Amino acid sequence: MRRNKWMILLEAIVLIVCVVVFCIPFYFILLTAMKTAPDAALMNLQWPKQNMLWENIKEVFGARNYMLVRAFWNSTLLTVFSLLILVVVSSMAAFVLQRRTHRFTSLAMLLVMAGLIIPPAVVPTIWVLEGIGLFKTLMGMISVEVAIHFSFCVLLYKAFIGGIPREIDEAAVMDGVGGLGLFYRVIFPLLKPVTATIVVIEAVFIFNDFTHPLYFLPGAKNVTVQLTLYNFTSQYVSQWNLLFANALLITLPPLILFLFFSKKIVAGMTAGAVKG
Amino acid sequence: MSGGKKVTKVFKRVYPFYFLIPAGIFYILLFLVPTAVSFFFSLTRWSLMDWSFIGLDNFVTFFKEPWLYTGLQNTMIFAILTSGLKVVFGLLLGVFLCSRIKSGEFIKSLVFFPVLVSTIAVGITFENLMHPSNGIINGFLAWFGLKGPNWLGDPDLALVSVALVDVWKGIGIATVIFIAGIKSIPEEYSEALQIDGGNAWHKFWNIIIPLSRPAMNTVIMLSLIGGLKTFDLIWAMTKGGPGFSTDTIASIIFKQYQAGFYGLSTAGNVILFLIVILIVMPLMKLLTRNEVEM
Image (cartoon, rainbow over all chains, first blue to last red):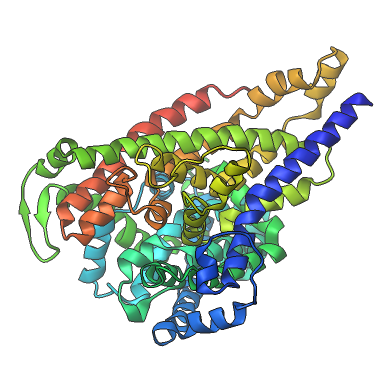
């Protein structure tokens, strides 16, 4: 039984270390968001003398003419429309790429995989966006998110479609449906589990995206939530309480998704990584 | 797949290539075309409206200017450091979470959650925690009578500090990949080992390490690629400072873009492209060759 005792001791140590290392930063965000500006500047873990959370949140929302409200609206639009397009175009593409073995599909697959490895070229993308008149527009930003996240979605869809027997296609073809009919009436409904995984994971990624909106969606009118936080860092130099109230607000949506879908998120990200 | 004429005809109707067109428009226009033209524009002085060809001048600048060259080195150091640490800690956590413990699911969620949190929020939080005089980390060290360093203010340490935060945020993915890898090892191996009288250490060293190689390779590739491209965490925490001590290629691309040197910025993109290809491709070959059959 000696070994068992050691195991319990080890577990206790790992548990404590993990709680300290992974919980305290979040606890710190919450505490600081509840403090007054001078208290927040002390950067410690003391419980706030008076709870200012509500006041801080109200002030953050009202700042710069309700910039955060607009940012939440923009980020929601960006996330929802990017997801819609991603699901439609990448499931269709993955279906053909998985089912057809052809010189052309292998080349296409190679190009799709390149998207997982190669960093997107920044200024040339702006150049293309300007050329088609979509630079600094939400539509342009949505298109860029689709292009950048397309490879990962194809990967997950392709792996899942590989597990759907071809006999299903054949039966449908016998019944006289093919092409779009087969895909949308027969195959797409079967993809529900992987579609759900993709929606949840990509929602978090696109909502959290900072770099691409920074480049491709400049301008105060177009601000997204990640950029509000970044913009407020220069404005709230000595008002950490407001900065952390903002951080708390934009951390909530992923937290809620994680509470409900943690299994799906973990499984999907593992599958995506291993396949890639 | 055999290619009879009739089969091809059915294929064309059932799995038509036009399914690729909607995705293709986005992907070609906004990923492949920019990547392709970046090679040309990296050889120019460029203002979006107008360009003039200057040959390899941008690349020469990159390798000659010490602050740009530092960025190249930092990119490599950052990528290697973070992926090394993620392998070590991810493997240890993975092995631990696969053993018979009660709090496994809880610890897994705890470790994984930062993956989903805004990088900017994480950066700002750790900027506070790492504050040299008020920060909690140095406060903790002071309990033990240690004088904590100036994590983000010391040019020799800042890059390592940011790398540690990157590991904190990304360790969750590494851990769940290792867990998946370890769980896929057939039970027979451990049973055989037990019959031969092997202990936990033997199991770790002779079974888990060699047979979780595919998982390890995935973690290495994923974190190397991610590490080479890292921008947001560095920008949130240090903006490349102090001085240029935490600049990476990705932050240089942004700085040059902001300064209006589009050609130089694009040259940075091409260099990053080449580094990723030159490191990742051979490494992928090497790593997969060494995988052990199960």
